Length: 163
Length: 93
Image 1 (cartoon, rainbow over the protein chains, first blue to last red):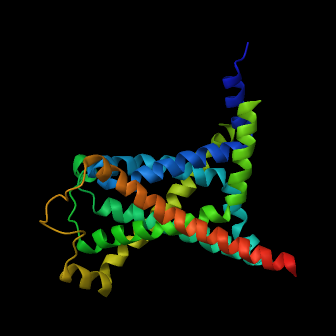
Image 2 (spheres, each protein chain N blue to C red; image 1 turned 60 degrees about the vertical axis):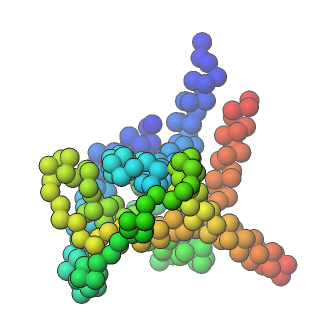
């Protein structure tokens, strides 16, 4: 006999929107943890940033079709929202890459632990700090754009949990 | 997890490949005059040699999360507010 928890678990995994919602929640929580190196400590911050790549890649995989059709959609875009969505998503992707690349280039624990010596430049330290600060409001705008979808999914997941 | 596993090897290779390529291109920025100027001027984050502030440990632990939540949450709320105001005007017309 299946428990209600097992049924609920199967249901979100069988539904693309719910799988996206659960994985996006994991991505957001892990990102918030990575965004606070003063709390976690630099060593944990760097190792967690490496682990963070997994939910980041999963997020892209779960929105694979959007990426494939994004340029075609931009050509056909009729509303400002669609164009804004395109620009914002790619800005966020590039900024995320920049934060990760600059972060790896100022690594004091990760690369030395892997036996890779690094000569840290002030330029990358500044870029990492500034881009990590800039990515937060951009993420806020990204969440605002998908707010209705988030709200709908929360209501749906709540209903499922109650019934 | 069937949606994550669908063609995940080939898709992940493409994502990681493109990201690595873009990442390597980003590293080239350190050759720019802007980077050289910052490196020669020097840059340090926060006050140096000022010691730890007189704030309880728990608050020091929570503050970075509060900062992150505020920097994400405020633009989110402002954007929602603007969308709602625009929606209000377009519905009236």
